[in-house]
Image 1: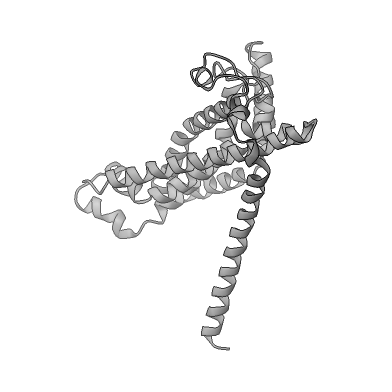
Image 2: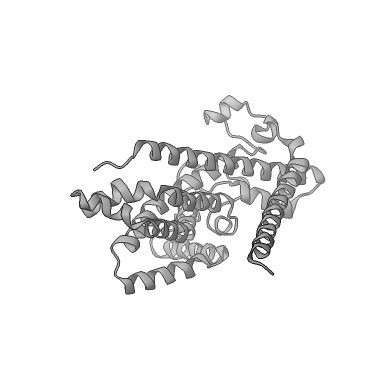
Length: 294
């Protein structure tokens, strides 16, 4: 058999795998749309509360998804706020400053950390909460802050490794151009290397955002409850869409409540898609505004 035959066979297999993946994703999304689109209306989100009063936080929303949507958004923003600086700095250190032996040890450590189940991270956060409650203050309980810190710990390996790999995969001529023109190492990193590797870094950030928005095991043990309302501070309990979906799927009393769970899953999917679009828009804007400057 000729090489052309094997090339065609490989291309056919690749197309089949791609179509299978697209088909599976389409089936899942289609299932959610069919089951949940009928419940997507203002009453599902705001219940009997006026939407404007809810958006301005003038009136509490009961039996609606608005508190869970706000809690999910706060959770993602706080988690990424904690994880991004540490993750980007660690990835830059491993790619540009770490000696080979240190790089190998920490790379292995972060790969192992990426494989830790989320329930283990949730138990760790819950144990830290108990320790703080008994050792420092009896006012410390599972809350939005502890959930955000636990989720940031969960997604750190994705940000670190994608940042490191994106920087290390840059061509040698990109790395050497700025230093040859007199730029320092720090200028080379921030003005040339990071803008050049922005696409790969943002891919890791998008993956981390999706993990923060959809994870249930961590928040279930560290602060999410069914009827907390909109969180008043980072030390409050909160509602979140993934926990609401889990709660409805396991505790529903009638088919209508289960349908609301499908609607919540569809809204969660739309919210994640919106966050991804915002992340890619920021990446595009930064790419256009940061050409090589040295």
